[in-house]
Length: 318
Ligand SMILES: Nc1ncnc2c1ncn2[C@@H]1O[C@H](COP(=O)(O)OP(=O)(O)OP(=O)(O)O)[C@@H](O)[C@H]1O
Image 1 (spheres, rainbow, N blue to C red):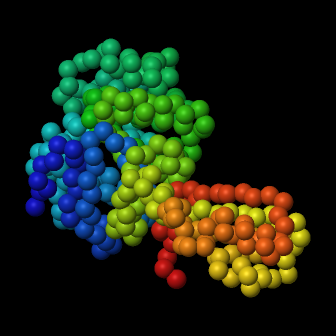
Image 2 (image 1 turned 90 degrees about the vertical axis):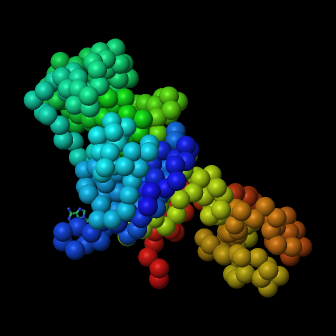
Image 3 (image 1 turned 180 degrees about the vertical axis):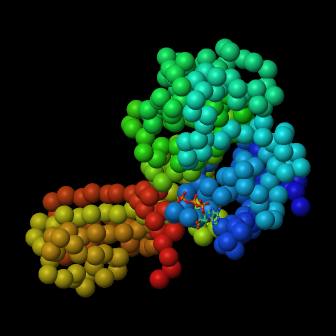
């Protein structure tokens, strides 16, 4: 069954499964709502099903079951309407290599039945630093420029939803920066962006929400900040004046480990615990150290990153 229409939802994935002809089940009953105007990062290890899911939503791969609505249009029944809403920058660079950049974007726009819009296409190419290359054949472009070309092509019909599958895999720093500027600009214009990435720091920097997929199942969808607060851990590192041979019994109340041959104490606690259990706060620890006569030179705190959280989430259960 389709979802009840919710104006805040731009993509509604309901019960989507995919079993490839080989018999391999790549997706298992995926439910996922993408909100209008957000940047959504889909994270998952190799082979988790990210590309399969994106390809289904974009109408390239047929689901074995379930439904997808793109801005209210069923991607199978209302295929044409759904397609005009979506732009896809695929992982693999495939395009009509013999056409010029300009012809590629112009032609691609025409395929979606959109009237010519040279001013819009000029802006897209300029934003992607491709304007100077507009008469160059795609195949004569460098790898990074080809990727810019793919993005321009995906944007040619002014889609409301843009999928970027591993957009920055193997691209240089400059292109990555341009790409994120472009993504920010698109979001500011109300375009919804869904990206897959292996660079978790990108998701950390760019995404509003994060979804994690593992072995064909969505195991988590969360606002990025909430996720980091919920699952993040903080660590306090205490550099001691004198190394300790072992943890003294007076410190047993704290979750401590001794590192660096006894010269460092590491205290790990949940970032979500604004109020730690009675007597287990940082102040309590420092007081206990003082009264035990354990001197320290320095203190450092660190929070776990989205990367740490991700690694914890996708690691195989022991
Ligand atoms: N055409 C196909 N036939 C059979 N199995 C396939 C096919 N395409 C993908 N798979 C399998 O489905 C699983 C999911 O693949 P998918 O490409 O969706 O993963 P992914 O999360 O995008 O991975 P990566 O991060 O490596 O791109 C993998 O085990 C893959 O081998």
